[in-house]
Image (cartoon, rainbow, N blue to C red; front, side):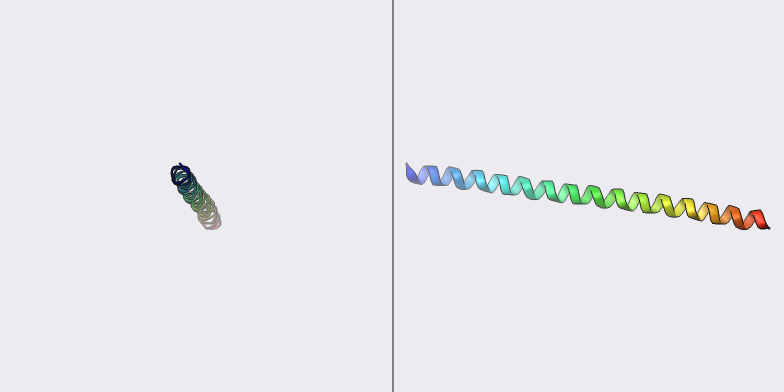
Length: 58
């Protein structure tokens, strides 16, 4: 009986750890993607502004 309980607890702990790792990885990836998108959008906006300024002066 004790061995069965230990096995069940070990499996539960393993599953919880796996889920936690997956959640952390997913959150990290999502945050990274959001940061990249924001940076690209901001850079694109700055680039367009710079181009319009340059052509505006010409």
